[in-house]
Length: 133
Image 1 (tube, helix red, strand yellow):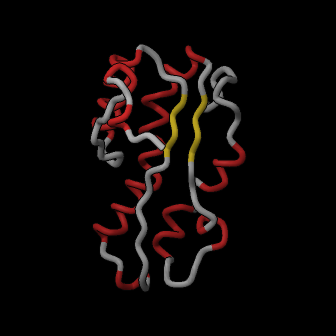
Image 2: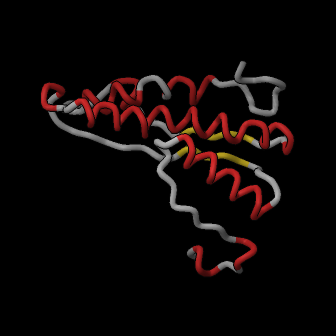
């Protein structure tokens, strides 16, 4: 298995990104297009997890979970969609079964994943014109 260091410079790009910050995601996409010339796929695999009783979750933790687990999907889709429509590319959103059935002691995480989980299996193909309208 190769790591990113095993590829030539023209075949690799590392951009540390906070996916919960819209401008960071826009910068990531812009730098990717500048480096590679096009975008074939967007894979949203970022996520945060928080276990424990819901009554012990702070406002900051709650908002952080939603920023990473839900807002990041929106930021990624809006930043990549125009490029993917022109290249015929696809979007892959990785979620969690916890968004469907939940897990003991993970109420906050379950709530943060629930909105994106059904869309993972029911969203129309990105190659369809205006699929996300």
